[in-house]
Each structure stands twice: as C-alpha cells, then as structure tokens.
Image (cartoon, rainbow, N blue to C red; front, side):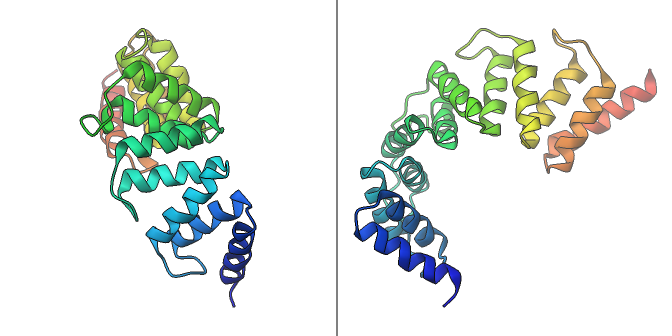
Length: 219
C-alpha cells in the first residue's frame, strides 16, 4: 500500500472515533483522490463531519465545495456560511474567498455585494498571511470601495501581497509606481515589480512592462 492509502485508513479510523481533524483530512483525500478513489460526495460528507466537530479547515474546504458545486449542489449562501466558520476559526484563505464573494464575485447568487464587508474579510485574510487577500485589499484602497481611497495604503498592501508571492500584487504595485498617483512616480521600481508580475504569469504585468521600458527610453 502506498503512503496515501495508509494515511487514508488512519484518518478514517480517527474520524470514526470522533476526531474532527481525521474527518476533515479524510475529506481532503477524497476530494484529491489520494489513497482513495476521488469522490466529491464523500469528501463533502467527511468535511461536514469535521466542520461539525469544530475543525476550521474542514469548514473552509466544505465552503470551497459549495462554491464550486463539487459533490454538493452549488450554493453560494452555504459556501459563505462555511467559509465564515473557517475564517472565524483562523483560516486566512477562507476569509479571502469570502471577501471575493462580498466584492461581487457571487453577486446575484445569494450574496449581496458589500465592499465594506469585503474589506473586513480581506484584512483578516491578509493579517493571517493570505497574500491574495492583501492584493484584494490593495485594490479596494486604490478604488476607494468600502474604505476611503488611499494610494499609499494600496501600495503597502500590494507590497505585502507581492512579498507573499502573489504575482497580481506585484503587477498592481508596478502599475502604481508607473502611474505615480499620490506615490512618487518611479519607472525603475515599476519595471522591477512588473517584471515579477510578468514572471508570475500575469499578462497585464508583461504588457505594462513593455510600456514602461518604452517610456524609460524616452526619458
């Protein structure tokens, strides 16, 4: 038996004995088809048991299944409910996904757009180390949605996102330096961050980098 198969057996035993983390991890193995045949319905069942037992990661992953309609009927309201439980339990990525719902990703699907709430959840996500949450918070500061517009703060959160490996954050920071809105225009810094974004697979980073190089030649 491979290691995943052994692990799956032990986690299932742990779950049968009422250990919530065993149930939550069994759910993850079923969702990924590791050590067991992939089965999203079973994954949802185990994650629900884990969540009910107080495992925050189990709640978060169940939220993802409801958002994607995998093993359960797609339901953004239920997704939000489980993501909130995960977020309250300290799972940063749960806070981040919940923030995207309130920012409009799930608008018209049972979640009313609310930029203030989005900002709240992105802040929690960012504070918890979720780099994409920092980037989204930067976007809200740049656009003044749900919070007072503040380019300095936008730059600060983009920097955090970029430092955390979020290529979109690097790209957005590069654009801020190129445009020079309330922060000193700096083509060298712009190029540096846009290059990181481009290397991270963000097409806008590559396109903007070309423009910045062209401007640098003209100055």
